[in-house]
Structure formats: C-alpha cells, structure tokens
Amino acid sequence: MAAEDPSVSGVSGRYATALFELARDQKAVDAVKSDLDKFDALLNESADLKRLVRSPVFSADAQAKALAAVLEKAGIAGTSANLLMVLTANRRLFAVTDVIRAYRALVARFKGEASADVTVAEPLSDKTLDSLKAALQSVTGKDVALNVKVDPSIIGGLVVKLGSRMVDSSLRTKLNSIKHAMKEAG
Image (tube, rainbow, N blue to C red; front, side, top):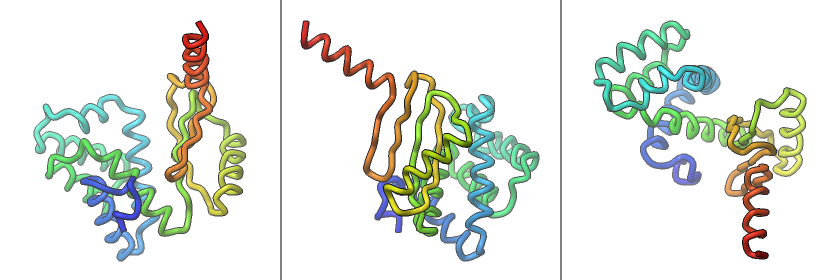
C-alpha cells in the first residue's frame, strides 16, 4: 500500500502504514486521525513542543516523560499515544509530522478521498475553504480533504498540491517571474 503513493514512503511511511493497518483492524481509523490532527495542531501552536520533538538534545527518556504529560493533558491516548511513544523510544519523534501527513494520505485513499495540500498567506474563512473544496471536488470527482498550511512568505494567493499536480498562484511566484522577465528584457 505504501509504495503506491510517494507521500507514503521511507521511515514515516512505514510507521504510518503500520499505524493505519492497526487502526483499521481496531476500527479506529477516524479516532486515530482525530488524535493525530489534535497533536499536529498542538505542534503548530507551541514552539516548546516543536523544539521537544525536533531537537536531538533531549534524551529519549526526557522526550518520553514530557510527551506523556502533553498527551495526557490533550486527552490523546490509545493507539495514537502508543505510536508517539514508539517514535520517541526509537528516536524518530522528529519525523512525526511526516508520519501524520502519510497517515492522512492513507486514510484519504481508504475512504476514496483525494488529499490536497494548500498553502496560503493567511488563514482562510470557512466560506473560502468550502469554495476551494468544491472546486477541487469538481476537478477530481472525489471528496477532497484539505491540509491547509499558513505561510506568510508567499505574500498572497495560494499554492495547491493535489497528487502529482501543483498549481502555484502565489504572489511571491508571480513577482519572481516578473523580476525574471525584467532581467531578461533589460
């Protein structure tokens, strides 16, 4: 299953595939996805948690103790918590965002959904997200799960990656192409 999708490969793909198969057998695919989404949101909100996850300075023991406290406070338990603790014990916690992304891709494929990575300069309103989702659904003919990332460096517009296709309508890219055209013209 992992070999079919380039976003589900390598170390993160192996962990995500094992987690997905376990969650599917336990009929907990959505519960695990919900827990991982919650953890991903915590990571995005907390610079300290991000540092704990990414820094090789912390021992596996220190990471495990801190992570256990975070998981308990967030109400993340069961299979999802076990995966995060295994990643910690195996010194692979730094790969957690890739594991979450790969797990989402596996869930989307399992449900017959397409998954799109969308990068925007600032958070989108629910109405705009619904419009974007509807546009992508009309293109793919499938339900589309959006993974939205905010990156102010794109200035404006958006970048949409759907499978192997990418549309970059960011202002940064447009300005760079104008700058390039001006250099060639001058």
